[in-house]
Length: 268
Image 1 (tube, helix red, strand yellow):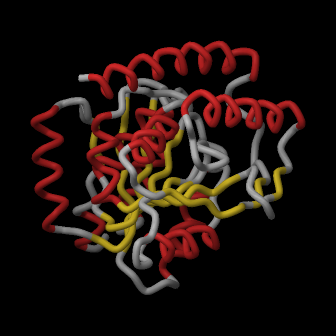
Image 2 (cartoon, rainbow, N blue to C red):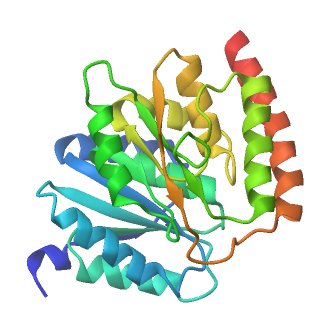
C-alpha cells in the first residue's frame, strides 16, 4: 500500500456542525485542487465501483489534480463498504458517509467538503466526462457563469428516460420558471460549479432530498450571478430509486416550503 493510499480519509461525521464546517473550510483553502467530482451513492452496490473507476480513469488523462468524493448516504446494501474500499485503493477517491438516505444533503456535504476550484456533481448512474470538460471550461471564461447545468431539456439534448419521467421534468421546470423565475431549463442531474462563488449559497440552502440543487440554483440566480446550460444525452444505467407517485407529493410540499423560505430570506 502506498503512502497516499494509507492517508486516504474515510469519514463519518455530522456535516451540519458549524465548527466542523469552518475547520474544513480553512483546511481546503490550503490544499486546493483543480477539480472535485461529487458522487452521491444510495444502495448502489451493483454499479458504484465501475462508475467511480470510469470517472477516475477518465480524469487521470486530463493531467490536472482532482478528487472524487463518494457521499454514501443511508445505504442498506454493500455501498458503504465499496466506497471505503475505493477510498483506500484509489489515491484520488475520498468516502464520506451520511446516516440518512437524503440525496440533497449528500450533494451539500460533497460540495462543502470539496477542495477543487471547480465542483462537478455526477450521479452513480449518470455521468458524462465530455460535459465535464466543456462545462468546467465555461466556468472560467471571462465573465463566465458560476453554474453550468447539464440540461435534459435544452436544444440538442437527448433524453431516453420513460415518457412519464420526461413529462414530470417538463412540468417541474415549468413550475420553477413561472413560480420562481428560474432561468435555466433544468435543475436536476449533472452540473458544474465554481466553488468559491456557490459555496456561500450552498451553506444557506435548507432543502434536502430532491430540491437542494434547485434551491442552490435559484439562490445563485436571485443574487444576480450567471448560470448556463449544456445539452446532455441521458441514458439510465438502472431504474429510478423513487417512484413518481412518491416523489411528486414530496416535491410539491418541498416547493411550498422553499417558496416560504426564499420569501422570508428576501424580506429579512
